[in-house]
Length: 384
Image (cartoon, rainbow, N blue to C red; front, side):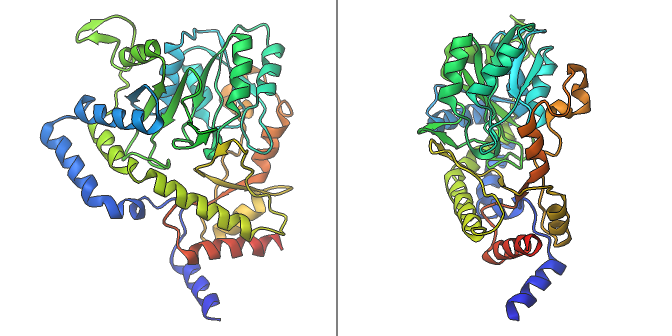
């Protein structure tokens, strides 16, 4: 009775959010405040020493040669496409089931998103599907493929790179949701020609505003990104190409460098919460996340799945004041803004099925035992 009373009070008094950033930064708040103060005192607001220090920290963390801080994750993809020579009218393969930014960045440079279906277990692009859509779209000159490491685990990069080399495609890893994840011991974003990262505040490593990064082992790509992100400058006031203003600011870099020290610990806690959820849902109709043997998952999202529609469970959890969400309710090929591409319902059945059936539960390191129990019990109530 005492525990039931606690859950009732929790329901009435406090919503369980999808993420609690205030709780996350509380233990390192003094260090973050000091870092921000340092930026202000040096007036090091755009690029500068703080950005350079963060770039070096990421290079070491990811075991990659070059890391270039940029304005946000979407611009990271756009700049990577430009640096790799993708031109207007050329096709870029990407999954139909991901956040808008992947395809939006392709369209922003005048290229054509070529959508592909997903693996029903990992929700990522597969090598076989990339090859299938390449052969199906021969009227378009396809130049690149963007596998998205969705929810915190990597696509099968060995297979995708093998197909890409066969088809003469460049590979950009969209690691926006997978910074810190690993594929066969290599960090996400370090396997293709380059990788792109988002440090949106809600990410496992999040800034205090917008920020992003491009990482690569190729010097030529790195040099182009450095020019493109800074108005096309190689030397100040000497513009060697048509770039844009996509520079990372010093405050975001300083905050991210403080938080990077905690990232592996935070990701480990996310894994423990995921394991708790998995064990709690054993013996139910809930389909828990599948993790490929080659992956180290960081659980940016914990996505469960059930047959039928997710709408009833979503509505019930929201009534229980649990901030459960659907990432993503409408696949990209069915979004109104991409109607000009001519896709139809049924073109990518796995993406459409996932959109109907998946649902994300809160999974941040600061979740209390009582909150985790309450979430599990609430899910079990509705599935009974």
